[in-house]
Length: 117
Image 1: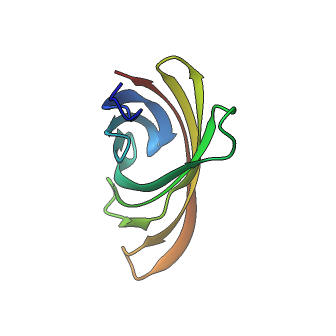
Image 2 (image 1 turned 45 degrees about the vertical axis):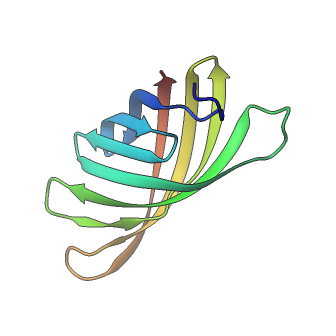
């Protein structure tokens, strides 16, 4: 772990673009590649509810592409729970706009687990 508490590198699995591999760098840049497509999120802001709780929140901006040519932008809004040393569980919803056949507002979600190196 870095001196400021940020994790430098995380790898895990998620249900995001169907079953997906997740890689996160510097607690800010999250890449997802899965059976249905790929996505990239920039986590812009993180915060805590209570210093004594292992639960934090985050908000970001990102984009996604599905293998069937659909693509768009999304705004991930999530919760992160530190399960134990090195392990994090996260859940997010992400309002998104699909641009494939004209703007179409949608909502997506993800659930994942990561190990922090």
